[in-house]
Image 1 (cartoon, rainbow, N blue to C red):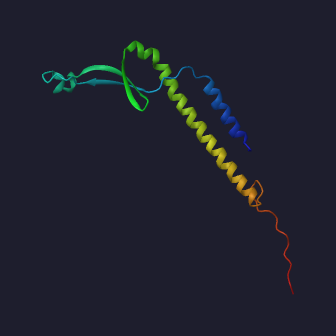
Image 2 (cartoon, rainbow, N blue to C red; image 1 turned 180 degrees about the vertical axis):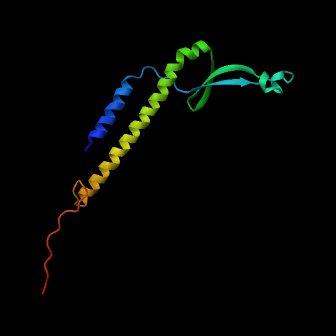
Length: 133
């Protein structure tokens, strides 16, 4: 398979960035304010009186959503790992895109070779035709 200099450079850049990633924590974090289940609580009628804020970490485990409430200290400690997970997904997506481009180019080159075209896409020279009198 033929790789261009740009494709090799891009792949090396991705590999280098992947090597810099430490721990990666899946999921997302958001800050929520909630209503409780007490019908007489002010939070039921007044959005400003909702309980919280709660820092909530959500992720999937065996196709189920798992939610944990984090303290501010836990969020500070885990923030870099959450960021690393996002960066990891971005790098894997970029590697997928690059790999698809390489395969598409390779398939085009192979198809052109089967059809007798040169690598640059030019038609092969044709033999001169003979005229019959």
